[in-house]
Image (tube, rainbow, N blue to C red; front, side, top):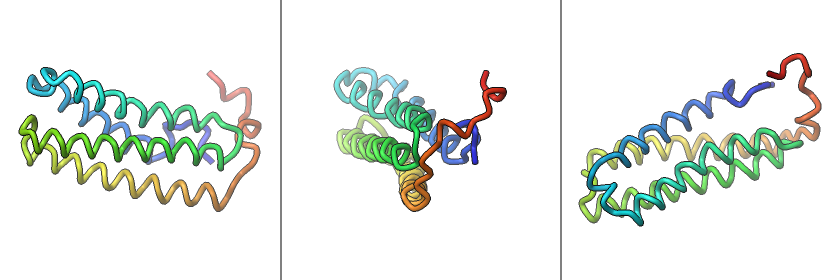
Length: 134
């Protein structure tokens, strides 16, 4: 069992996806469209934030609920990237590469959510050794 969220491969996959989206958001065309930029930024930030908050929950089911929000945020980012592509703010090549990564992350999150629902460990917070903190 992972004692830190960073030990989970899905977390590094999510970090990579979020970093790739952040790089797109730095493009001048994206920065000029304040509404779309803000919407994508908020959804993108929500992916890791929900994973981090969920990991601290007391049960696997609670963690899974937060991961469901992360998965939804991935979907939102992907949808808004499609809009940026349609309005020619971003190139199809740039968007398609991120959509492929997003789809892979969504599938991973879905599988991990199912796993957590199946195992439903009820005492996530108390399994940690206090000496591991810090």
